[in-house]
Length: 269
Image (cartoon, rainbow, N blue to C red):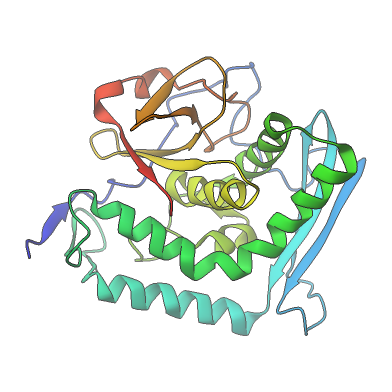
């Protein structure tokens, strides 16, 4: 089994050179309190459900056609369990961070030729139970508002885009568990893309992780009809979705990442 030496920015993405989003709106603003009181409150989730909500639970407000809001939080005990589980996953993959610069890891047998597929799928499996109640809020809104698949996808995407961007300081593959992204209110490109992919997959939208080692970036792929940048995997075409910052439409790729040959498509199980 061959150990891989990867740069520390392999899955750390940065759009700092972009000052404006595609629609002309400034990037990087904090979604918490950034818009007026929501027109539609999707509900609130606190896990475990056997415990009452906590003051540390996070409230989100964002705009998609109208103003939406929801709440999500984990108990400190559950947060710690998720952290420990992800650390154990990193240990199984022999992940070692040097603190700065390159990190090393050794994918288990069966994870080649796309070893990051194993990381994404195992993280998604471990996080599924904690993400499902959040996804259910969007499923209920789909029924209430009679949203078609495209509108439902855009609602989820705009929610995830408005989660604050930050590079992880934790030494976990440079990847945060999806429920930690929502509970803590921040995440980077791959962490946010995995959250969106899990939610949409559970809602019936076929998704994939789009990953570029050379560009040090990750994004979401959605198998929906439409125009714009897309990547094929087998007979399935996935539209590119930038989830790092607000304002990017489905199928719109930031110019510095418009290098088709440098992307891989990693479908989720």
